[in-house]
Image 1: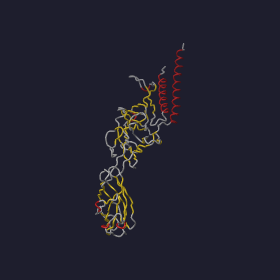
Image 2: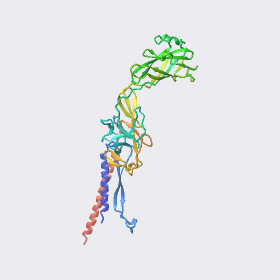
Image 3: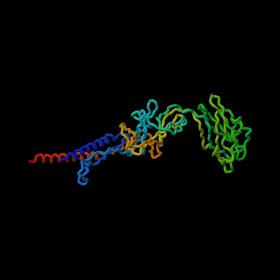
Image 4: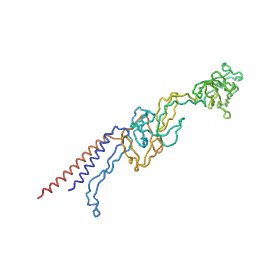
Length: 406
């Protein structure tokens, strides 16, 4: 009698229970992917044998295949907890060895690098000082805590409405201290190369129908030698005359060691309607220095820092990797996989490109283990184990009958 079938069944059922038990044990492991044991039947091959008359030699575990289905995403409150919604793996630098994970629980280390709980550094694309992402090979991502350098104003955009009902004035009599010599005025912010803030005052003098001279002063000093910095011309419908310019180059001298502020004063989009003077929009591109107060990660993997001066700057971009055959990845433990010949080469790119998933900051991807299904599978595996044990018992009884024959 052969005990092979029952013994192989016991081994296969035990291996299946190992896989199920590992799934259950990791039901709360962030980024864990459940596995399924896959079985194959066994036959004893013979050159003269016929497959139709062979009973088979039992079963074997063909492979233990991980299932890379999406796990549920839950919020965590930590801005460096990142979940992948879709395909892809985080790419980690493990002291020169590249590993991959779906566990997005990260934190900065003492040097500012973004690392996993095991100390592996998250990789991605670095940003220049101006926040531009450099297209190059992924490198270790580091959060710079340096102050954001100030930027001198180079452009002031002002969307205004000038009152067409205003009376004309003599521009030669303009005096910023006498409101009777100008029609209207408005303050505008400026910053020099050291980040010092100042105020530019723009004055509008109606010199003729649909024509306005623009004067400017700062800190009590008239700019452009007291002459108008430019003129605004309007059509009869109140819109700017497209044949005239609405952008004026202005230079403001400084005395605090900074460079003179050279900027364009842009009134594109301004109007001249029969209503009161008003400022509809006002913006400048200069700012003071700022300290990093926080950062977040966008769906595209962009790490954006927020600064005390209200500005934002890209600090880097998280890179993702995908494989033609993720089930071919080599399991390393600690939520890590390594590339292998079976998985294929890693396809690295930015999130939301080339089929890679989107990222969600302040969240983690839970294990994709369905606990209820695993408990049912455990009961089934237990019954299979018992059934195979029963076949061995029956074989033993038959063998005992033969031994006891007289």
